[in-house]
Length: 225
Image (cartoon, rainbow, N blue to C red; front, side, top):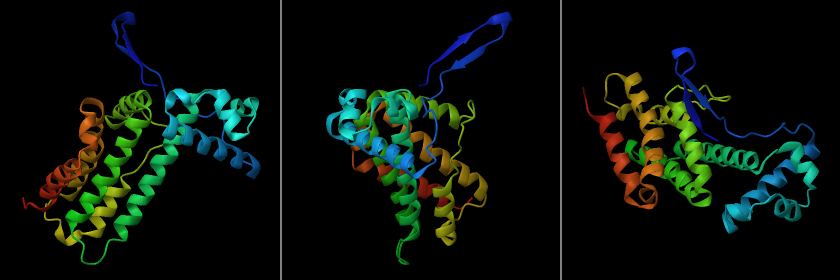
């Protein structure tokens, strides 16, 4: 997925990047949507229960009841299918995050919201680092290039969780420059858990990790200038 090589034609550096695998086309008709959903569901079941090595084209076809030719019509490679599964999984986690953030009781505090964000986000990375370590590493490298604005993604995720957090607890946020605070919170939520996944993956599974990050972000937002 993320593979880059520097070359120097005519004295200039050029960064060559291999983009993530993606579906050949998007289903439009209801029957096609159901077929693709069945492939993604079956693929996820195999990944989660049996591991990446078990997810072969023949196994996918047998378990899903979808012909190999029909699989190729939408997913040219197994990697493209895994990418689609990951995007669905990540999208569901983000929607759940915003819903749970907004559903916190009136007695909830800013720290509760920050901790919720870190718990859900870190759990997502931990899950994928266990399900398919190689895919997780490649996708994390690519997402870091996107975060650093070195690569323009086909689709851009906005900082909906960060915005929802700051809208939910405006009275507890004491830092004067809220735009700067929003940037720092957003980048921390993205960068630190991903760095742990790449460099210290065991940290993702330790129960105090979300708590430590939540304390840091809470201090950033609640310390007056």
